[in-house]
Image (cartoon, rainbow, N blue to C red):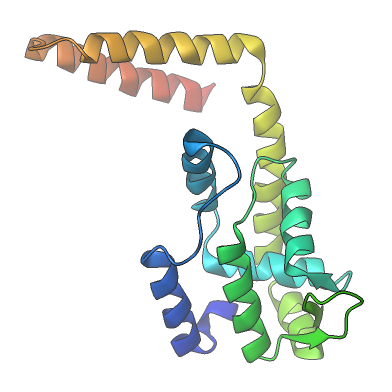
Amino acid sequence: MRIHHLHHRFCAKHERHERHGLHGGHEHGGMLEGKSRQRRERLFDANDIRLLILHFLSSNTAHGYELIKSIEATAKGEYVPSPGIIYPNLSLLEEMGLIAAVESDSSKKAWILTEEGQALLAEQHDELSHVMTRLESLGVLGDNRRIPEIQRAIHNFKMALNTKLGQSELPKETLYKIIDTLDQAAKDIERS
């Protein structure tokens, strides 16, 4: 049985919170970094996040912050789930009986995987494998985005596009040419 099929009323409540912006989203960096992280957060749905939590709890007891750091480390800093994504899912998994709170040295709540959680994680092995592959690939992609030549090319592209689109009353032929060029560039990059 998949995680997201269990306890629909809990999922619905938490998804309403996410949809209405109650999931946090106030990241450490500036506004642009926050938008970039928001886009990356969409790479993983609630089920993916719950699988990641179960996966990391399968090896160690952890606090929410430690889970965030484990996910961030796996993605080499290219993906950092917000506390507003992690903590509601921890509560949900606890309500579902898949994890349990344990005594901790600090005042923070720590969790451990239950037998039910271990069984579900074993059932979801293939799906977890896909999620982990995506998470790990972000670190590789992030390294490529930092190549100076790539950064320069992206900057030049954005400047040329913004300059052209900022002109008033562009002829339709010019707009169509820009759209065709963008579509073709995207296809060329995907196929390379």
